[in-house]
Image (cartoon, rainbow, N blue to C red):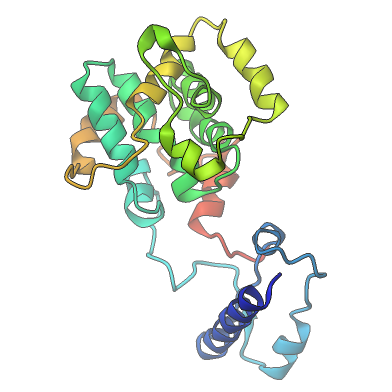
Length: 254
């Protein structure tokens, strides 16, 4: 970690410590978070801080720094209160709808990057597909997972070219990892290949600052194509409920 990054990290930790004293709770970052900052040091103990301040507690409930989530949160609640800026997703879904794609593919475009805006960037197509798998058509799940891979591979038959923005971001010499290439070879032969490809065709690789899309445009599409659990996302005992709970309470200690 260079000096400037270390100094920034120290200031952030100092601010977090100050907030902990003021709010009587202690936020302990997950290992994934510290690794992402290049910090490989052993996890620190919270016991000295707890002993120094008898009022201090480890955060086990809602984080008061974040917007409050409803008791039974819906997908729309996550868009409003947890997902980061989502105009990219809404622009992609808007283009898909204008192109006359089936509603489930419009939904796939709306959800294709939810892992990026709400969970994790790496392998975001795989994570995003898993997040929604119990609640959408199987083809939607497959397409979301596939777009992660297909975006790196041109398809002249439908006019899809490798995004110029990727050259700027990753370098002209970047090549996908072997597992990505292996998945591409399988996906290229799959019956739903074109569904995954439709996401890449309607993906917005350079955002349009002049196009503003409201989430309300897709309320009915979500209602008809997303099986919202009665108990709320995160509380329906599905195989992915814990992932939604992690988004609701990302700093929960245990």
